[in-house]
Image 1 (cartoon, rainbow, N blue to C red):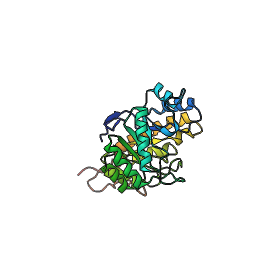
Image 2 (image 1 turned 90 degrees about the vertical axis):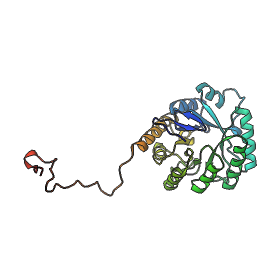
Image 3 (image 1 turned 90 degrees about the horizontal axis):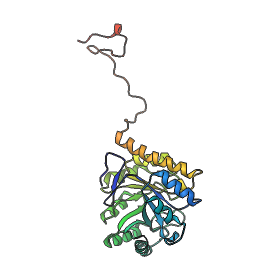
Image 4 (image 1 turned 135 degrees about the vertical axis):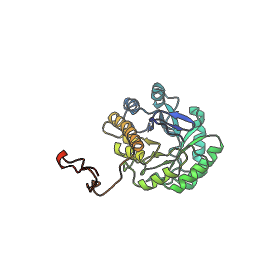
Length: 272
C-alpha cells in the first residue's frame, strides 16, 4: 500500500483520489442516491448483485454510469463460502470486473462475518484471480490471515452493519492498522461524521459506509459531511495530534541564567 501526500491512495493496484467508498443500498429515491454520491466525492460504490438487475432501466447502474463511478460488487446475503464464490463469479460476468467486496455472514441478527467461511472464500477467489476486499471483524488475527491469503485490503467493522454505533474497539482497529501491509478500510458501523474522522485518525486508509448516509434525515448533506470528515481525519493523522495529558503542559519556570521572555522588559532577568 502507498499513501500519497494528498488525499489519494492506492488500492488493488490502482490510484484513487477519494478515500470514501459509499454503498448504494437503502436510499429513499434515485434522486437522493445520485445527489449523495455526487456530494460525497466518492469514486468507488458498492452494489449488491442479489438486489440489483444490471439490465433494468432507471436503476442504480444508470446512476453509477452517469456519474462515471467504479462498481464494486459485493456478496451481501451470502452465508457460506460456496454461495459467496458463486455470487462473485456471477458479479464478474454481470459487471465485467474481477473486484469483489467479500461478505460471508454468520449471524442473521448482527450480520457479523463467519470467519471460517470468509477465509475459505477469500482463498479460493484470490486463486481465481479476483481482487478481494473482505468485510471482517475487528480481530487482528483474522485480518492478518486474510492478508496472508492474498486479499488486496482488509475491511474490519467498527460495529455491526447498520448499527450506527461507531468504532467500538479503537484499540483493535489500531492494531490491525499497525500490522497491515495492505490498505485497512473501516467498513460498517459508521453513524456520523465524527466516526469517519476517527477511523482516519486511527490510521485507516479509507472508510466504507452506506446507511449512515442513506438513512440520514438529509442524505445529501450527510454525504457532504462524510466527505469532509474523511479528509479532515486523514489530514489530522498526517499532522500528528498533541500528547494526551490530564492537564496542560506546565510552562518551564525561569531560573538563574534564563530570561523570563513572557515578563515585561523591566522584570526580565539578564542572560548569564
